[in-house]
Amino acid sequence: MHENRTTYPAKKTRMYQQLQELPAKYKVTALVRMEKVRSSQMLPLRKKFLGQVEIISIKDKVAQKALEKLNIPGIAKMVEALTGQCVLMFTNMSPFKLNVLLGKNKIMMFGRGGDIASVDINVPAKNTGIAPGPMLTEFKEAGIPTKIDQGTIWILKDSTPVKKGQPIPDKLATLLQKLDIKSVEAGVLLDAALEEGIQYKREELIIDLESYRGLFAQAHQEAVSLSIEAGYITKDNIKQVLAKAAHGSRSVAIEAGYITEDIKEAVLQKANAQAQSVASKAKGYTPA
Image (cartoon, rainbow, N blue to C red; front, side, top):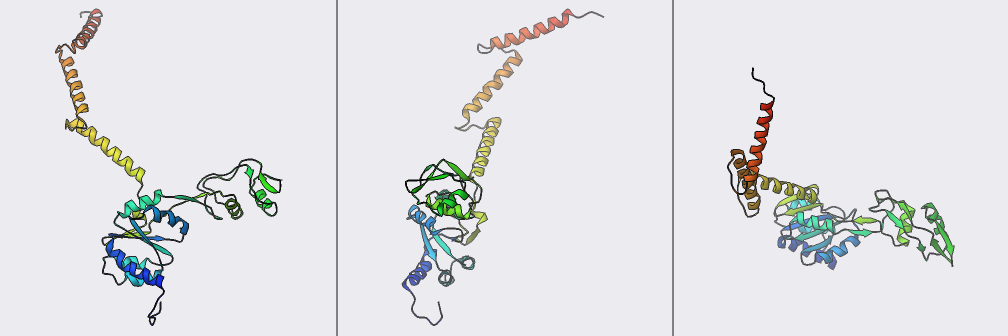
C-alpha cells in the first residue's frame, strides 16, 4: 500500500473496515500464526465457532494500518506482533477457554516429509488401485510388501512403516497421501491475546486441564477432611461428621465402661479381657 494511492482492492478495503470495527465490538482480540498451521485446519473451526468467534485471515500491513489507529488499550503491542501470515480471532469468550477449545478441536491430516507421526502409521493389505511403475520402488523403500495383480499394485499384508513419535520420510509421506492415510494430528493454538487491555503470551494461555483437575480434586478432599475433623457441618459432609461423632462417643463410652443397649457387649468383652489379663498376671505372681 503506497502513500499516494487513493483506491485499493475491495478485499483489502473490506478487511481494513472489519479490523477497524471488530476490536471495539469484542472483548478479546487473539492472534494465530500460520507458519505451522494449514489453511485446511481453519475451515472446520470457522463452522465450529460460528456466532461465537469471528476469524479473519489478514494481510499484516493492512492490519497494522487498521489497528494502529484504534484507541484501544494494549492494541499497540498486538500490532507489533502482526508479522508474516496471521489470523485474527475476535470473541467475547475468555482467551483461556478459547485456547482450550481450539486444542480440543484437532483434526487428522496428511503428513509431510519430516513431520512427526501422531499415531502408529498402519498400512492395511489391499488393492491400492495404483498402476505398477516407479511407485513399486517407493513401496519397497517403505518396507511395504507388494505384488502386481490385474494391472495394479496390491499390498500383501498389514505393515507399520513408522511408529508414533517417529519422523515421516519424504517419499513415504507422498505414498501415504496416495493411499489416503492421514498420520498427523494438527491443532491450532493462540500465539497471543488481548483482553480488555491485558495482553497474554502463548505460554501464558496454555492450561493443563488434567493438572488443574487433579489440584481441585485434592483441594476438595482436603477441605472435606478438615471440615469433618473440625466438626463443621455442611449438607455435603453431615453424614461423615455424624459418623465420626458416633464412633468417638462409642469409643469413650466403652473406655469408661458406660453400658447402653448398643455397646453392652463391647463393654463386657473389654471387661472380660481385662479380667483375664489380671488373672493371668496374678497366677504367676509370687509374693516377696
